[in-house]
Length: 127
Image (cartoon, rainbow, N blue to C red; front, side, top):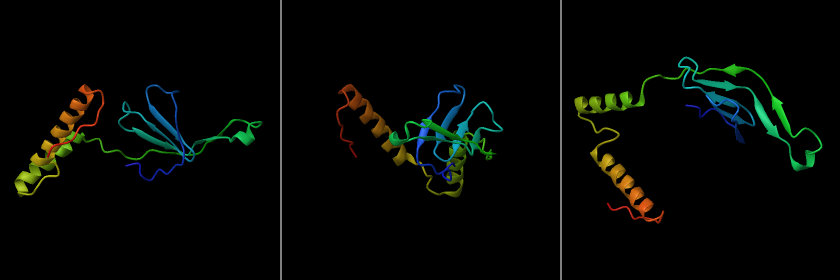
C-alpha cells in the first residue's frame, strides 16, 4: 500500500519503541498498530547523512514538512482470504490459494525444517 513512497536511503530509528519508524532521504513513515484510526503516518521529513568530504559541517541534516495519514483498511487478512475462498466455492472458480498451493507451502516448510536440522545446508524441494 505504500508503494508510492519513493526514497533512496532508509534509516531505522529506535527513538519510539511503541511505533515502527523508518526515515528516508525524502520521507519518514511511522506505523502504530495501537492507533486504528491513524496506523500509518507519512511525514514530509527526512534525514540526510553528510558525506566524508562534508565532515566539518553538521553530520546530519534534518528537514521537516507536512504529514499525510492514508486510510488503512482495518479488515483482518484472514477474513479476506476466507471470504475469497467461500466466494470461489460458491462461484465454482479456482481460489488463489488452492490445495496444490497449500501442498507447496507444506513442502517448503518441511524443507526449511530439514535444512535447519542439517545446520542450514541446502535441501532439494521434491515435487
